[in-house]
Amino acid sequence: MAKTVYVLNGPNLNLLGTREPKTYGRATLKDVEKLCREAARRHDFEVKFEQSNHEGEIVDSIHAAGAGGAVGIVINAGAYTHTSVAIRDAIAAVDVPVIEVHISNVFARESFRHHSHIAPVAKASLCGFGVDGYALAIDGLAALIGARRKD
Ligand code: CA2
Image 1 (cartoon, rainbow, N blue to C red):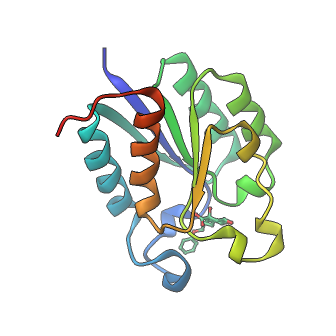
Image 2 (cartoon, rainbow, N blue to C red):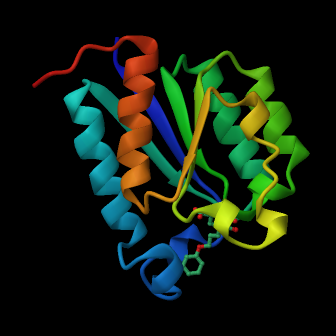
């Protein structure tokens, strides 16, 4: 059976690479998808890559990952990280390891970004590695679940 990792992106991440390059770099979300597919291939994972500006759609995707037996979820919930109890509850409700990713170092930014509703229900969190954090999250997920590398 295919081992699927869901990579979920929250609000405004569709704008990656178009503005705020000092904070988020110049890579687009398409570039991030490519990077995730390359990282996933090394672990023999399939990728479901999604972006939504709508909280309920992200909740639905987390449920779908749970129902579909995904091996993991890598999530950059964007600003919902700091506000969404619904996304936190969805993560807590599924039996799937979740890795939280942020492109920027949220702890070096405004104090409202220092709190994450997701971190307490995630297996691991990383921030500040730029978009490379997504690949690191997939590698970390594979290490956590003991998936064998292909190379
Ligand atoms: O650093 C991250 O990855 C964030 O999750 C990005 C969120 C922010 O609210 C979090 O505090 C940290 C914002 C995503 C917005 O992305 C944009 C990208 C380019 C231009 C404008 C927004």
